Image (cartoon, rainbow, N blue to C red; front, side, top):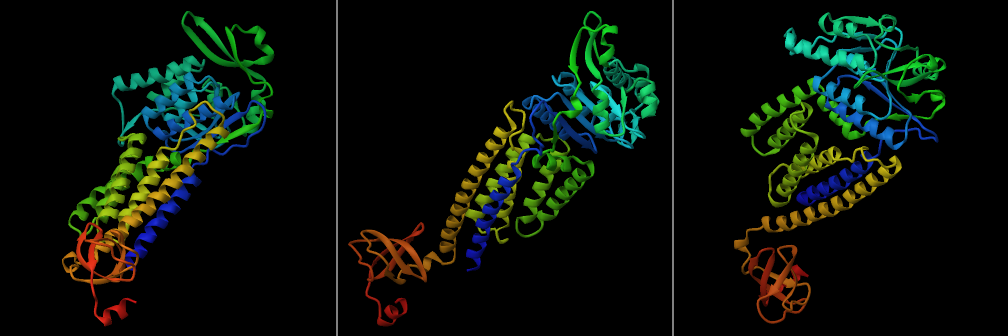
Length: 474
């Protein structure tokens, strides 16, 4: 009874995990309306590879919704240089203008200053800050001229591309210069100041984003007052922002997969997971059972994902393979820790599935993407339930053979539950068994004697039991 309850619990875990998988496949939160919308993404915290993935999805969403503008509300103290560089490339290649807005009292320091400088429209709120771009390795600031000059060129090239102050960009790196919103506007590091996003959009309505050609192969982008365009030289209009404040807004929210990755990518979380995984595995090698090894391996894998050493897709594959191994262990062996291998396997499958949730990079309507995710999740639900049931039945069969000593089977008496011609079912040792008659036909209700165990089937023959046995079996 205890073992049966154990596998019923495992089956329930599969079912509940599948329901959870259905719940997490919902797409980003949006307030959909007609028109050419504005896509808004509120970004705060460390800039990591997950931030890059999120911005990729923001741009993809904006393309599928035919958006006029992408707005990133930014508040960060910096992050990974590689991620920042990739984000700057995404900004430069985005067919939809990107405006970065640092809200009041927020900050765009280090990597955040790079993002603000690389945007097509740069805006800040009162008491917001920009600057502090000197790189740091570990806890020490970098002073190597080669490295510093390379970063200075990276930032100043973006400032030049958007007609912003290149000298100030250089000072952000070499002097760790910090500027408030008013100073940044006066020095030409940003274009607009606003108390709120709503106010900023109203102000932006009077501007137009244009491309200008200074010399051959040297193009720049900047916003100019729409009413005064005729007095400026420009090669083409990129976006007229008139009426942008009244457009519908779509607020992008990262899906569960990206949210989990963002949590894992936090340096402290990654460090703790790595330490727990390494030391837990060392301890588990000297402890009974396998629970410690399983948990430690999962912690190490998640830490490597968070640190960016293992890619997300690879992690998803590894987690699913690990989950399959755990389920096989649960179904085939008696590991002795009450279904933990099966539960860990289901957890790995769910987490691996989260990493494989379809991104919004496909250029199809977001409603169709949700439909695709729903179909995929429903399929996962059906297969998880069927697989869970199969695990339960396999474990049940294993329990039947492991609870008894096969050497003691020969000579044991029982009763045929169905006709054996030659196959059927018999009742012996308090259980119902598949059985094969050694010879002849055995009718239902007749007594049988076990000859031997063949796999999970009994080989039996007809027998004449004593009277007390017949009474007991009936």
